[in-house]
Length: 481
Ligand SMILES: NC(=O)C1=CN([C@@H]2O[C@H](COP(=O)(O)OP(=O)(O)OC[C@H]3O[C@@H](n4cnc5c(N)ncnc54)[C@H](OP(=O)(O)O)[C@@H]3O)[C@@H](O)[C@H]2O)C=CC1
Ligand SMILES: O=C1O[C@H](COP(=O)(O)O)[C@@H](O)[C@H](O)[C@H]1O
Image (tube, rainbow, N blue to C red; front, side, top):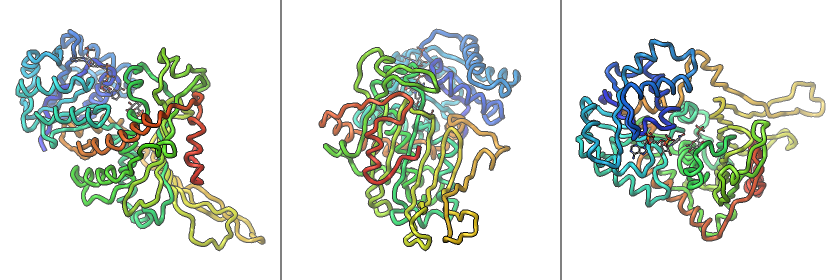
């Protein structure tokens, strides 16, 4: 595994670069985790020189890195790594100037933080300038298309210059600490695996709630909606990690082989099934964090049929998960920013305590805002119990914050950037995974179009339309709010 000595950052002046990528690279540089020779070459259309780019980067660090984490020396050392080449990626002739800045093209990492419509010309330009060497790595930001066909077109364009072993497709959820902790929890403990199947588990819920609205990404978001923006990628990756078979090794092929099997086993939701298996919502006026907020259409400035909320009932059609519903829900302007996975175990087969207070065990994996793993267990209520034992559900909590109080938490992009420059592919999404994800999503969208299923309103600051509650209640299941 060779470590890259140049990182080429396309879209270097953009929002993602300023908010996430440059701050993450800075964090790694400040902690001595980057190769001392690593140079970061920013590129975008803006006609900046290196000094102006460094000034922009310095400002981004001021804005997005806490003051105590950016001592002046570390900032200066980071800025020293930076160079900038202005380039319109649609014009092939500009790429030779870029190549001249790159040292060894076989020790190059490239990050495309630009609109996917630029991927094709960028790849052609890179290849034409000799920057598609066998050792080079290419990271691609989402969205990787807006459906299966467009995703295939992007992947085909990329594959003309870079083989799959050099492609790093970003899903930033895979860089999150608790998401990887799922692997540790499932495969580092003997406790869960014997029950981790349809015999022991009655349902799984995955919620990714956001309090924010459009956040200045109106055109992008309105063209995508919650299903494509969040479910197609992050939520299906979470589902795959929960449902996959134990990989034999923690390596890219073994982990991704298991995930893709799950994604391909997702039962298609087609035609009229969308009416009983999905709910689309769009927020109206309401409140967020105690402040009044506008309706989606008002924020957007025009009427729209794009969903800002989606709830789904999915099934993984294989031996392990026969008959177990996976409920997914995500939305903007929900009451909390909260991502969690709830694994609902089955009741004990026979209760010697009577039925009254028995609650089946529940595993609660909180991804954000706090990392927490909780197991709801039955315990005896203290007392003399003249009328028989009384039981109550109590939490067995592992607060990651306390359990690992002395360990610094890294944001997802720090881990992903480091894996990119050092060449570890496990936390990046393989082409077959993306395509299986799109296949499942496209069928749902086709069903929505076929049935004319529109969006149901919900007030900002609530958990989506009431139909989302009915989706689970019909099966006797409640969302874990
Ligand atoms: N922002 C976010 O939170 C997230 C963004 N993404 C995705 O990442 C990508 C970048 O997003 P974001 O940073 O928000 O977008 P921005 O619009 O803020 O930035 C786009 C970047 O692309 C550059 N660019 C535009 N046209 C060209 C061109 N013809 N040639 C070369 N460079 C060009 C811009 O350069 P210049 O300004 O100099 O013209 C700018 O640096 C998008 O695909 C987005 O969907 C994914 C997840 C989250
Ligand atoms: O990819 C995206 O993710 C964010 C949510 O990410 P998180 O790390 O804050 O949970 C979402 O806001 C955005 O719409 C989407 O494109």
